Length: 127
Image 1 (cartoon, one colour):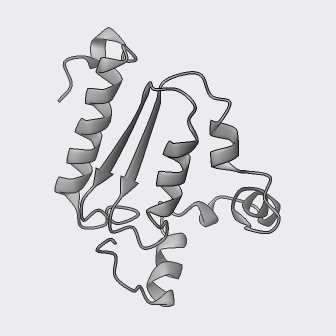
Image 2: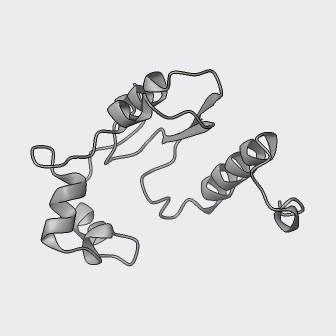
């Protein structure tokens, strides 16, 4: 169960055409290749079965576009133990109006990257 709310289609369309919406910057062919349920070649859980590097999966608990079952399936598909699942409670898809939650999510990602030695030295002092 999550705290996501029903979102009117008008609001979803506004998000997709906002500066953060991917639909604004892709061609129809590109969009179908990435996002079409029936036509996409993308399969996160299938692809993640072959990943051997550290994996971080971040799930926004109140995401109105991506149900929590999707990031959970991606996390479960990783076939090694160097993986971490972070759920950002109350966060929606684009963090609109949720600056504090966005900062919290970024801090979580940076903290994980530090544990994996994935940050350049100049970024180790950030946050």
